[in-house]
Length: 437
Figure 1 (spheres, rainbow, N blue to C red):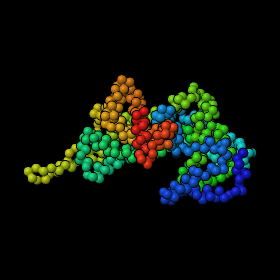
Figure 2 (spheres, one colour; figure 1 turned 120 degrees about the vertical axis):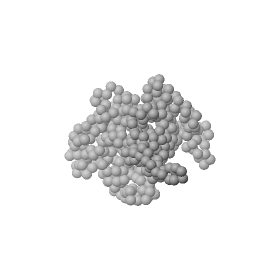
Figure 3 (tube, one colour; figure 1 turned 180 degrees about the horizontal axis):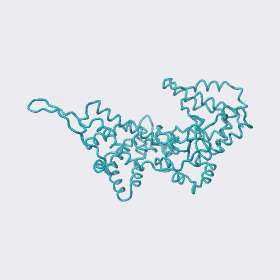
Figure 4 (cartoon, rainbow, N blue to C red; figure 1 turned 30 degrees about the vertical axis):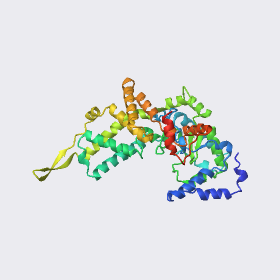
């Protein structure tokens, strides 16, 4: 049992933590950052060290990628055929083995709350409020935002008359997207590996609250439940779950847990190693990106056409100013597909990923990747070509805090050649080291 009983009379630290972790969205950014830093550092001060290992911050460094990328860092999304209704709930789904574990977790709580822990506010109302959420809707929303920005810019600057054909459009659109992608996510990879993508999209989560991360008072109330919270943590570990540090009422399946593997076997899984887990339950997201980009571009041009099928064109004849209306090219899907084949979209995608990855490859390097990817697409298939592009433009290892960064620092430190951050741009240095691997 927790040391909380022994320390429950020492309220000074608890009061200090509570006073310094009550962040809200109404505070300025500095105050919010300070309070959430206190929360991260001190909120779990009274949790026993032997159970603290299951508390994970899924918004920090590479833990953001948990359940979102496979062992090759390829972005993935859930195969929805593998989802299962969580017994005892309505419209709450998770991957089959997670649903079974969640159901048995709840059943155990129902058994224990009337015997081991009576009158527990935490356990009395423990119901699953949220589970699987498709990542597709979030990605489409961000693509829609980019398309809206494109149309608003050209409308606002009265430059729609520069886009009279589908070819005119694609030239302007590609240029705009490459600039937009410097600060925004476009590709499946960029979206899934960003904080914009909810970890509920992994199919590994169950939430006992629908409150957001900003509800620090609720989080502290849960953590301060003493014996009840200690019981909750230990039961989570028993059923193969992590507890989200930034949202303690969120459980996330621990794919390395022997208990989780037993639930997988019970659900008929033929393999329970990490590769099998991803092969059986997820699809590689970037395999769809060429079609997504093509359909997105065509839909954006179709929107433009529907808003303004013709443009007023001014011209001068014999010194006189005249106006006429010129029809915009009709958005025909078949014609568009013929004009902009997979070869074009491979080129578009490589350029886009180069911008998103911030590896800053030069034109010759980009053109080489495009050329090889096109050959692979013709000789094999799209998935082989996209895997090749992914490997060439993988940016996770070059981010500070990544395992590659840490291993690079370790090697350099042992050599006595770790560069001085004050003298160099370390992120750029890390990118160059990785590119020369």
